[in-house]
Length: 106
Image (cartoon, rainbow, N blue to C red; front, side, top):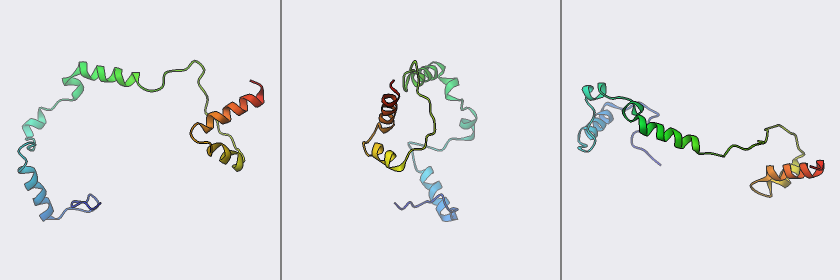
């Protein structure tokens, strides 16, 4: 995809002028004045209750805590064993865990 104004090179004076003209001609989104910028406040300061609500929602998301979580380890497996389990699709790590549990008699 070709973009007219690439961020990988500096803009020419003509391109900068064109961008400034486009900014000035947009009635729905005028450029902020210095006074408006100086009056800006952080979202959390303006809407503390909404920010707290968002924080609670984000904290609620994700996996629920488990009583006995699995632990991450590093293990070396033969390439053919690894290929076999990966070829079975998503969840191959759990299937290796199940096979190890069965072999250990757990």
